[in-house]
Length: 182
Image 1 (tube, rainbow, N blue to C red):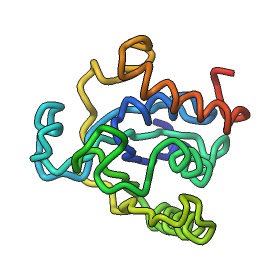
Image 2: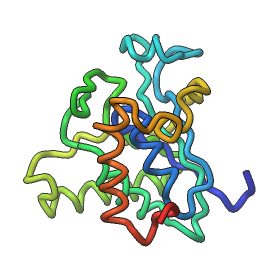
Image 3: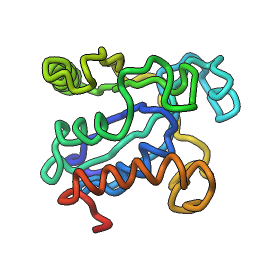
Image 4: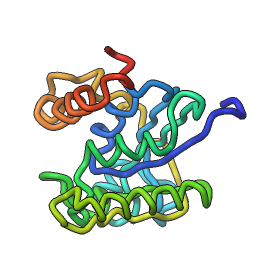
């Protein structure tokens, strides 16, 4: 990673969904599925899925701020997941599926808080409160290799076809100018 690149970490349900979207964003050089902000020093998929580790499924995004801003990444994040349901995204239920932004600087934390305040003021979700937690990034671990680029390797798998693909399509429709696959 060169010094001009930055990182942002987002939790928005199953990491396959968020990773598939962020990997298509112009200016993102890497989108890595992982686990963050739990207490287990060596989490793995089975343990995280049990809900006992405290980790969230996340995507750590490495991006070039000269091409895409943190605020634009926040726009994408809040478009492709449901930030008003506590510990749930669709049928995925548990603390590992919480909506969260794990920050690496005060600037990121302030930008995330301001973004949420703006969404709330606009009643962007019909007035439902945004429950996205904003905390400093802690105890991040990459997910196992088979989770990386899962959608690209398994586009016709049931979950990918019925859950991930619609999120990718929503991104492509709303953010066509940011889509590297266009």
